[in-house]
Amino acid sequence: MAEIKEKRNFSTYNEIKTSKQDYSPEYLEYRRKWNENPENCIVGSFPIHLDIEANSSCNLKCKMCFQSFKPPKPGYMDWDLYTKLIDEGAENGLCSIKLMYRGEPLLHPRIADMVKYAKVKGILEVMFNTNVNLLNEKMARALIDAGMDKIICSIDGYTKDFYESIRIGGNFNTVLKNIVRLNKLKKELNINKPIIRIQMVLLKSIKNIEEHVKKYVEFWGPYTDDIALEEENERDDTKFTDIVIAKDFKCNQPWRRLFIMWDGEYRLCCGDTYGKFKLGNAKETSIKDIWLGPILERVRKLHINGDSHKMRICNECGGRLSIIKNSNIAHKNIKNGLLKQFKENS
Image 1 (tube, one colour):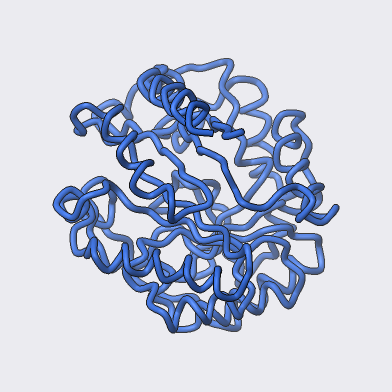
Image 2 (cartoon, rainbow, N blue to C red; image 1 turned 60 degrees about the vertical axis):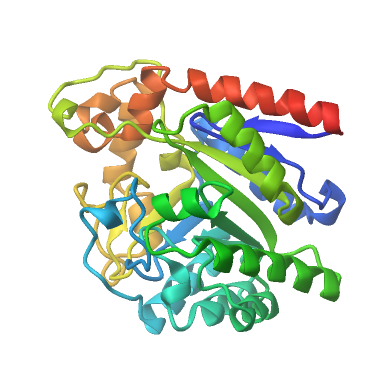
């Protein structure tokens, strides 16, 4: 039976073509900790997951993305820093990594090598988001050979005109061709991985969004293992001077993951695009020392006590504002409609 999984302002239509029997006990334990550690405020001895930014640049200028109006300083993570991070992670039970944050990972010349190194070192799940435009056959085969676990494909719309009006610089026909080819390669090789997730942003500007999402799922469904819907975060700079108190809000990220930029800078969460909240640099301080250090300890205490608004980075968080204002009501309606649709088609 199809299942919709909601993750605050993010939902997936989960019909992954691998079952729990395909997963090792280690993988299932990793997912248990991912779900239960934040809920129970358990701080492991090391992050469960690292977001390692392979590079900060992008080949597209999508309308809803900061790359279109305030791109970060461009750069690529060097190999020595990357292997240093993975080596420390492997020694401390790191479960998963995502090889991107602000940029398009397929621009990194050694992205397949990065995947392979992590898998050889025993990282259970290696993934990244991509806009798919650069996922040609050579790259697809290299990633498969490297042991890639999941590819998250960011694609808005199901027509050429709509897609190219949002994903500026992208080519819809190229994206479709690359997705079809990746599925064909998996079938030819008789493999389940990389798991393919296709996802879209629920842009507030989309008219008749329920019908749009229905057609989106119908179009992309045959080419993917999983479809996801991501709500467009509220990001109104004029409101960021206000204090927004939410005593019942507690972010999951300080108990799950840590972000490391291409130049080694640590970041608290996915919302710190420009490094407002200083944690240190991986070239000088170990991941473990940051994770168990006094700064993150204070962050967690503030969230536990319902005082996340006392940190500017959290008070200004678009995701937090969306949750507090319950602006995902439309999102929930779409989710419920999709569930009904897929129950009828199951």
